[in-house]
Image (cartoon, rainbow, N blue to C red; front, side, top):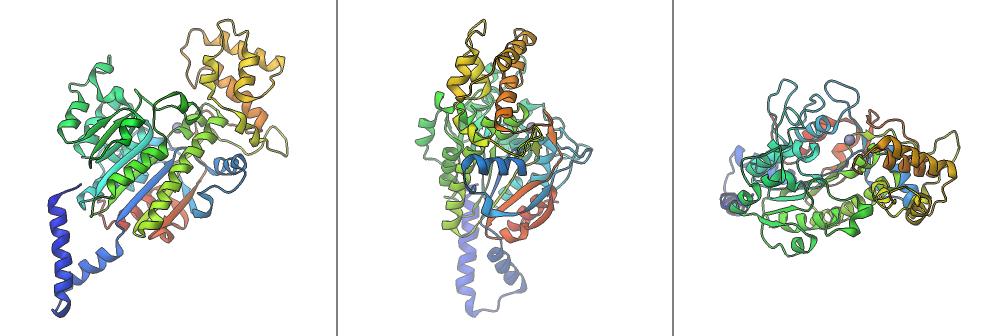
Length: 452
Ligand SMILES: [Zn+2]
């Protein structure tokens, strides 16, 4: 928050510090000085949703060298939720945001439904500015966990008004449908939240170009009706990249002398995993990595910023290699230039051009048998609209994964541990095997925030 009161207090304490040199400081003054010195000014939590060790390894082969995250590895995270070994993003986000394990599906409330204070809310109580930057809808589980409290993650309609009443300064991502009542169809909300946001002092933007021109301290950017485009297809849209949104968030939030808390999510690595679209997962990991580069550059220069990076769980049970072979061919994914649903959208009505279209977007020569598998998937698909999880897109993804020797064991999440990365002031305290709840507690400690 850019509160006048906060800067007055800060000014006063600087005055006290410089004038107080020759004066006996009370114990309280001493304590206050020590805490303000030891606490971190800016905290940035980055979540590559679904990014487990298999994603990290495959991504390294895909890139051809170490990722930007690799040298920042400090530990591993145990991801289980309160009620199951295999968490969803709601319970996982709650653990990262509040330090408490809840049941799958619940967003920053206890299993009994009691609201939990989040690190974002704690940062605000310290006068810091806050931001949420995601490629999903802003009402999705991870951003919701930092900014809202609902007993059921599917109650997305309830989330935008909570984000706005929490006065999150920078709000960038998808989810227009949940802010504009006329778009919601059956799921009506009573008010137009974009208009409400404007009254609260937000600049509202809908395109990359408009975002570039934002000058104020508060911005609401909604770039898609629900989730934004996969990075593989983004060129065909006017949407900003995750790195562009993150840079704008840093430029805006850094103006606050009290510091800031920012959560950045590479939301769609997870979506790619659910639909077994390995190329899309790698490309979205690359997009996330670009955002990490911007954040680390900022933290390096600032010297008073903590950066923590961790996926919230594995998605799809991805493997490195598979199909009984001692090999991977991840490099072929570099030739894939569109997501599976996009490729599907280019098939003609009778699917007679499957072979040519797949070749155009993947450089792969499908066998007759593989072409037939895609045609068979169409039969079982009926008139379903094209989306990640439909049978055709799913079959295309599975075939590409087989060529790349990337295996999948589930359409859901799995319960494996995930890598934990940290950089900057206080990064060392994240080393070791952590519970996901430890992350929130350490973030809170870094900002001198009490979550209880
Ligand atoms: Zn997921």
